[in-house]
Length: 285
Image (cartoon, rainbow, N blue to C red; front, top):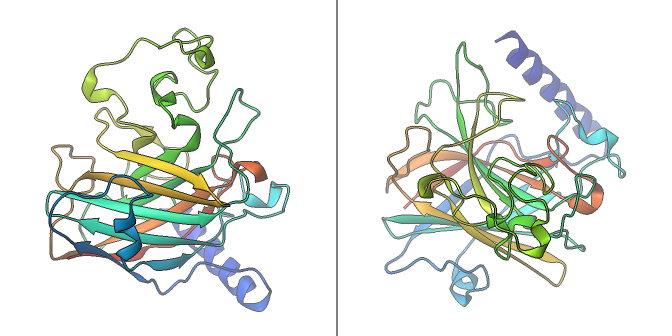
């Protein structure tokens, strides 16, 4: 608990510094993301014209500076992305989120651990309790008093079927070499049981604080990313209700919390060196 309070104090000091200087910081008051109710199938392609008709919201972002590795050490001295456009749809059975942000370089081919990918994540509290919401930066509490978050992370290097040649749990290609030594030549590693396989370029994770990120046994998230004209458009979608106790659950007519993270590979962003938002409200129509 002391570490959590210390992290909050640092965040407050940083926010004050930003107000006095010229560094943009994520809106501390929170914005409302609305998941619009629709009938029929959810468009699963980020390029679908159906998404152009959906009203969205722009979420401000700032550099992660609370935990190591911090954004100060990046080539720019900060993370790259300062805002992300967010849209959401649900049909009562599935819910989807579309993220769009500016990125002049596509970093989706990663051939070793010194190359950096583009990536994005959604972050939700697992519990619906309003009394003790987890810290938006990876939850808090650890094993003693867990305040768990459910993280959906899209990785650009897992697009185009590459999710099947990078072992589940490998942070980057080249890890887990006992499965796939030459994965770029199409060698498929020994797949785990079907329920534990990725369903595409998005991984389903949990955390209870910095340094606690873990893969779920059940991988429920699907998604797709497309880069064009200096922009990424990435869709995440999943059944609104799952059987997994470590998943956040969505019910029509309720309000939850959501936070966002973006990594820019061209700025050598990795792990904690990223752009983040604070919690924002998510209204599920």
